[in-house]
Length: 125
Image (tube, rainbow, N blue to C red; front, side, top):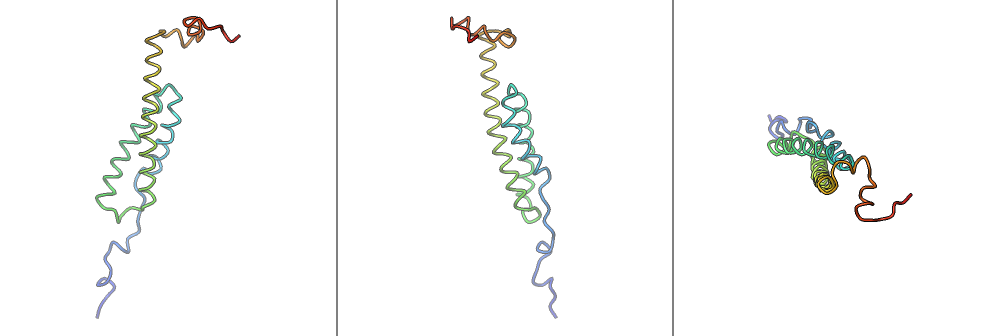
């Protein structure tokens, strides 16, 4: 007599679970894009954390893809892409602020009219 175990393996009956931290990676990736407006520091921090978490989750998925849901894997990939974009934008923002500080000093953040005076542009008010 044959049983169901002859036809199916245990993997087919196992309930798939989402990858750990899939939602967190996606949220951190999105925050890293938005965080580039906060002097770039918030975006860099969230982007790097999301990228590290995504790489470990992708490694976990590739070891046993039948154990995890495909939708959580797609969330991980989307979060990783957002994190990479956020890191690039935040890196450019940090680089721009460094260039501004080297050119005008830290006083430019308390008195933005220094740039107008430096280039002899009339002040708007």
